Length: 194
Image (cartoon, rainbow, N blue to C red):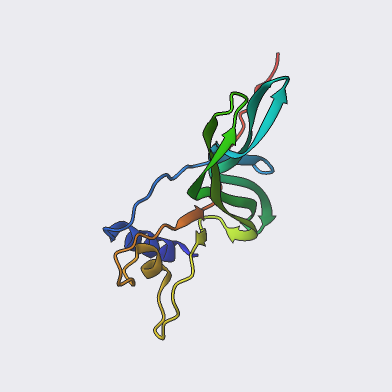
């Protein structure tokens, strides 16, 4: 995207009362370096139970699994020539949408039934890898758009993200990554050793 298109897009998003920008990290990299931005945590869930008998005693061992939730952004920038920059990276998101809980009754060593809860999370993730060459100052915009019902009229990207095209009151969540490389020239001072 050229600078004027980026400005128009960002302005449309900022003017929408439905839009909410959660975070906007800035990363400074030297050519050839990799950088990461992570808003990531792991959520553990009890996915299963296993009775374990030792002598006359029965214990219950839980089977835990953890799921990564949040966003990870990995970038690498190199000089491509003619004032252009090569940008490679990955934009990864993961989330637990909902969790179903099931109760299981197990007979303990004392003959009593004990209720245990097992969780079944619905996990969704997206991963977008990109490798583009851009003029310094231009932007690359990656948007995780969920499919909309088919309609005859065309809907612009800004309308989809801000939700101005929708007729229902259901909340929509979109994740965007905008990469705008800028070149900074650093002049080194040389010192004369005596």
